[in-house]
Image 1 (tube, rainbow, N blue to C red):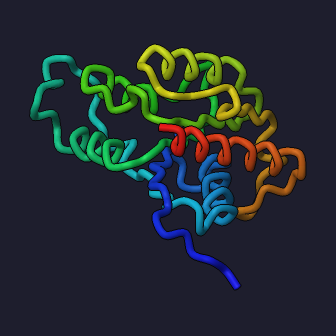
Image 2: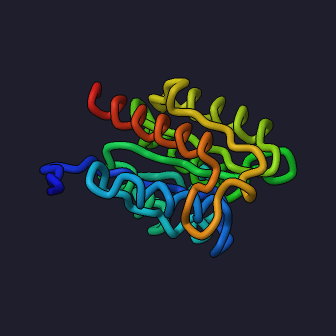
Length: 182
């Protein structure tokens, strides 16, 4: 018999890749399957539709896609970001979306977990952690994971590498603890 969680925590999930079948999206689907009763995962699908950051438009009435993104962040108890590395850095669309939240503070003290899943990933991972910390995201070390050679560890909406599976569970459970502590 399964017991339903009465008030599952709402997690907005952001894939740093805009590809329809990216390794990061496959990883996200696998994570959603691992924790169906603990969290209410909402996969944000509008990353590619957020306009280029422009401080002149960063007002109380930003572009609608930005307002929608900010609202989804505000309505969530926590954030899970799964991102690849592009050209030794953060994918531009992801960094752009985060830039839109700097002045409006959606990430400030918000529990965040970051999984960088790529071929290498070290440069993007370090850069994203630096960005998230500067905007005051609540991202403990236990909520951070770098998965190198991700395509060999995730297939068909499943995490096929046992070590990676356990590391992912640790990160998501850490995110849950960070939310509960807030």
